[in-house]
Image (cartoon, rainbow, N blue to C red; front, top):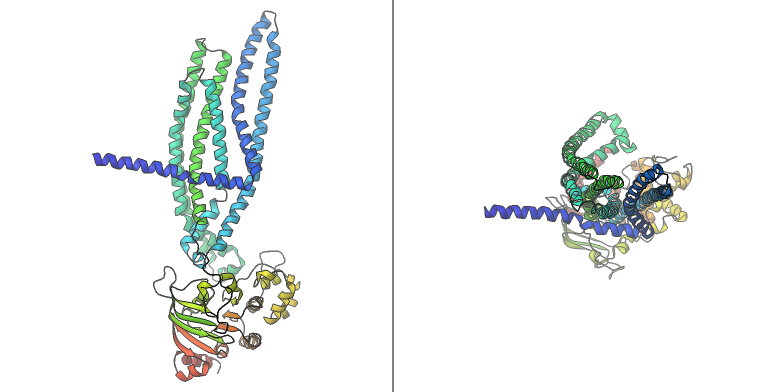
Length: 615
């Protein structure tokens, strides 16, 4: 029995800690709003104070008007009129107070609207700034995407909502205190009745706020899938296959299925929330009318005046509204804090601290070395690369050959520090990549990935994306496009380098796959100081003749640079000084074309298969 009591006590303590712990983000939200606009925050606080004090004043003046009218009526019947002027001036005063109350509420709404716009932008920028600091591994993690989705969906509106509720709480507390000052003269118990009547509904509302947040977290993967299905069904890059393969009805049915699943959970929560809210809300209604009967009986016994009765009626009604609003604000703040936890959970995602500061190597002629490098993707069971040893000197070219998924692109990700090896080390000019300043390292590398970005921007900006320092430099666009063999078709576009690409915006122009790859090649050449060029299937969308022309041109331009090439076309691969064959993350063959053909191994087998296709 004792153990049971202890357990129950602990459970209650955990609930209390969980409830009050949920408010830990309130201070940070207020600081965020304050830093967004000092002037608007001060104005909102001042108007909230005024709006909290005025209702009690209006109620008190209303009571004076009723009593003055009763007195004036008696005077008129006896031939006097001394109280008529008092009635007039009291009515004028109440009108001024009501006008001030309306102005204060309008001012509060104005401040909230401006803060909402500024704060929404501020939080969205914070989310995007954080995204810029994250590693590639974060973006390849489904759980992280759930976290990001939750942060973006609700968190941009919650800080202001929390601050508005905080100011609303302050306003209603001020109003309730002012009502209490007037109600004490009627009965000290009046305030206790008001406060106790609102507690049951508050407890229920807080409980269901927690349930709603749990549901919100649970549904994040389904919400992301819905957004993805919308993208597939309604964007041009998925439209062709959706139509040709008849995928539309099936994907739309899946979209509807997710909605019905989420709707069912929402409906059940809403039914429970509203059922409890209705039942517990009746307690407040019964309390209000019980107070009315109490005041009416006291007036009938001539213990208070008719004006006081009117005032107390108003105070009880407004007091109950204030108590309800206070408890609702606290419950809402609890809910806002729960949702804000998703924002700060995302913003506080740990990131890898910059580890190096080197901007140049100790042996400029050493090139790139991989020494016993192994790497496994997070969550994967088998390594993507294992025990890789490799040396590429300046001016040499290296071709990577292997099946899809063998580890070729992973090797490039390690070289560019998008990932770090689990074991072994990679050196550039005698310095471990860990010790390089990442910006300095990446400025030395020009990369074209197989899935390069196709920006819905102008042609020139698509090229300029290769070097952010010269993003708007038209002369550099033209120079890089010449090297990437893209200038000829660019100059034939309607507006040349000013042509909008893609179909998302007006007058957008779509390019062929080969033209996009030339844009990507030009992008790589934007980094004129890059002495390492990495091409991951850069000409997969081109015909063999165009590819051969581009690579002859490319070899001329890449003298004295390290070139790393991934390609499935052996007519291109055979040009490389070194060729490595990767299988299941390991180097199984290494040499030049002639050496590997003579070995009659895996490379020779693949080469002969491809050669037969051209006979």
